[in-house]
Image 1 (cartoon, rainbow, N blue to C red):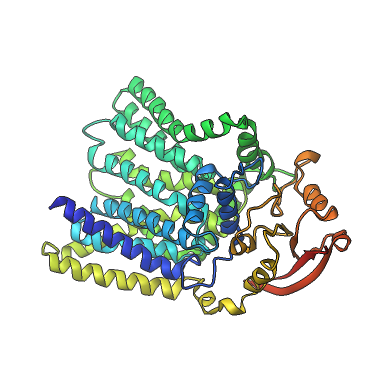
Image 2: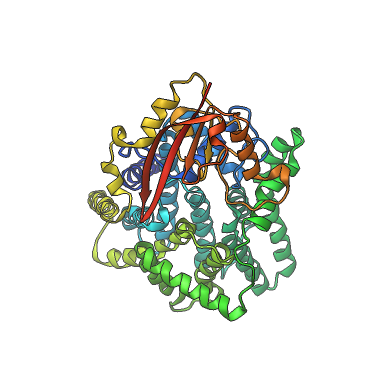
Amino acid sequence: MDKKKTLIHYTFFLLAAALCLMLASRSSFLYPLNNWDDANSYFSVGKGIFNGKMPYRDIFDQKGMYLYFFYGLCYLVSHTTFIGVFIMEIILGALDIAGMYRIVRLYAGKGVALALAPVSFAMIVCSRSFWWGGAAEEICLPFYIWGLYIVTDYFKNHYEQETMPFRNVLIGGVLAGMVANIKYTGLGFFFAWMMMVFFSYVAKKEIVRGIKACFVFLFGMFIPFVPWFIYFGVQGALYEWYWGYVYINVFLYSKFDDYGPTFFEKIYNMAKLLYWQIRSNWQYYVPGIAGLIFTFFGKGKKVLARLIVPVLFAFTFLGIFGGGREIPYYGLPLSMFAVFGVAVIAVFLDKLINTNSGSATVVLAVLCTVLSVLFVYANSMNIPFMKTSRDDFFLYRFRDEVLQTKDPTLLNVGCLDAGLYTLCDIVPTCRWFQTQTLDIDEPENNPYMEQERYVREGLIDYVLVRDDIPKSIDDHYELIDSESYGWYGYDFNYYLFKKVR
């Protein structure tokens, strides 16, 4: 009976995730395509992995390996659409909802927690942070949420009786390792996670055991790295892995200003950033703030139990935005704290509604799911793009022109991957297959010089250019099509050049 109920629950989670993402993500079949350049870049690198290309060395983007591997699996489902990505999003979304159900269940009954879990998810996916679907932050969410469940359960129900078992510490480390291999800026959450767990050992005067727990956590964190040590080590490319993921992100990608702001300027900038984050993503910040207050106050709570959720929020925020760069989807991990606001609602409903009967739970679950879908439809910024027809979208016209050539090659100049690699099922042949915003001094690793060489020497069949046309383009190429296209106040000009035979 328990297995049957679990199966029913996860089926419900999958259905709720699918309904919300069907509207919120441009990977959905309701949209002509997901034209987000970041998501298409991940898809192209994932495609490259399964076509013998090594990330960072043969095909460059600067995120972590699990992100590309997951996208590569999506490529195996469909080479020219994002249907595989949509399936991945649904599976990960179901895991998000399952984790949020477990968190709400810590405060309220099973029926109410089950019914309200999709509400938390809807608050996340209809926000501005969710962007167009398929972000690295979205892929990380299940690892955050289940880590949040483990540590919340411990401090709420077990902290006063015992220290956290090493098995749970190990799981927390594995979750951190997964995030580290997708987008490491989210590790502020897990730093605070282990810090607070260590403090719990110290509070019980088990300092030595607490130090051991830190090593257990680090060992768990190391486990997800093992496949990539083998992958790159066998091919003698460990340095390329370090250079492409660590060096580029830490020493190049994070250079924003020529001067360092003072401490008080940093505090002011962070406060201002948080203010705009709240305004832009009120869908999850409003319940999130209510949830932070709810978890802090309460009778009989120990200090660490009161602080755990606010501290996790603060370190997650600092880890993401401490470098000074603010891009809308960066804040998505902070959306997980909305679940505590939903827990407040669950506690209130638990007193009003008797969900001991299965029928009452079903009715409430259906009602909450319908409201969640309507909330997504009313708030997702992607809904207007649903009206765009494939026949009217210029990338499909460009695709038809490119596919007139057998086994075409392509170079994307002036922007990240616009989506033409995906639509044409082209595996990039140039390491710098897209224009990266990287200031690299070494000539052998300079993306602009390499792209310029490919154009100057006519090494590629088609060149997709956004705005700034290369000076040497006329030496080997002719313009065959163009389109003006933009979004949210930004206007761009796209040009498609074909090599003259």
